[in-house]
Length: 145
Image (cartoon, rainbow, N blue to C red; front, side, top):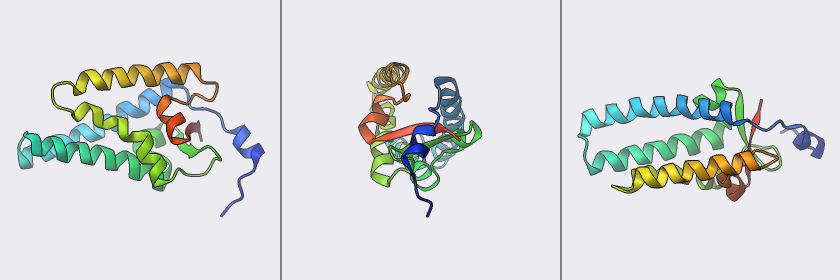
């Protein structure tokens, strides 16, 4: 395993909002296709909502923790790292992505998810390292590869 030095961490270039939004759109498109396929198989009921929410969370957590990037992040040359520049742990990835479950809350979910997105965007813009509140909470960063 390569040694990560402070100069390596300092040289990481933060991922900017346009690339991050593009990555999320790509990931969302992939997940919509998967969610629609699940719905056709099991019906669009609460079971589908739970299965789709679980799939969304698993997609982001597994991709971030094992690969450092989802399909969208890989396509936009972004990577999630721990504060020290290494891949995030499963715990960090779970903490970082748990906000994605807000949209699955019946009735209030879309409003809660929209509020979370605004909060995340505001905190990304105001952070010199471009860390959203979810990154700060989890101890992660999104950087350019």
